Amino acid sequence: MNQAIKINGLKKSYGDTYVLEDFELSVPAGTIFGLIGPNGAGKSTLIGILTGLLDYDEGEIIIDGLTLNESNELKIKQRVASVLQPPLLFEHFTSNDFLHYVCDIYEVASEGRQSKINSLLYYLGLKEFEHAKIDKLSAGSRKKLSFSAAILSQPEILFLDEPFESIDVISIGRMKTILNQLKKNGVTIIITSHILEIVENLCDDIAILHNHEIIAYLDSESRKELQKNSSLSEIFESYIEIEKPKDDVLNWL
Image 1 (cartoon, helix red, strand yellow):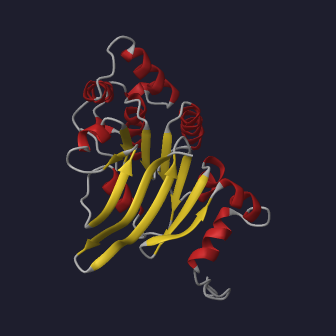
Image 2 (cartoon, rainbow, N blue to C red):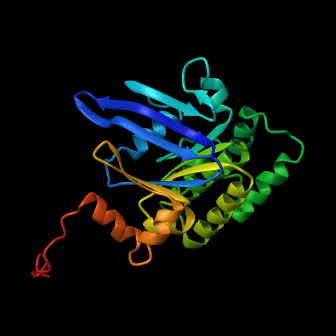
């Protein structure tokens, strides 16, 4: 299977502290890929690097067959979209104007554009905020607006950093429907999330990031075997070796 993303020997540090060290990862094209790990593991840092928002110290990154460097940066950005945590939005735009602005950047055809925007706003419960300024939106609505913008850009690769945080249950279900349709259309989707139940049900392959590196890679076949007797949450805990508190630690309650 072709690899949408291939990372070799990646290093990223803040001062004397490594967040990613000799990091290796391959993401198969046309899949929904889950990246999980405890707080501070480096998931958001990795997404920041892959989207070009953060520099890195060493290593090679290949995205959609192109090496991530200065000469290829624009070509790569034209092929990818992202929903970051927190979302990067223009606060004083209205929701509708922001989506048109993103479409202009990605050169989305004007014909039929408003119809696409209207359908997304309606489907994700944002229609009533169509003409509201972004700085007036709730955290969940802002996240859904960022998600809508990413979808409208028609990416080949989609990066989602905690996309379901602050989102209501109905909208999560609809976002999952959209993501599955994008997968059918050949889009590669990389998701970081602390909501392991969603990752478990939505993703094909899952990698666990801990202590600067991938400590486990669970492809669809190995997951089937592991999850016969354990949930993803239990598997996750076993790999990162979380110390379980004693039963009487809260006996004062």
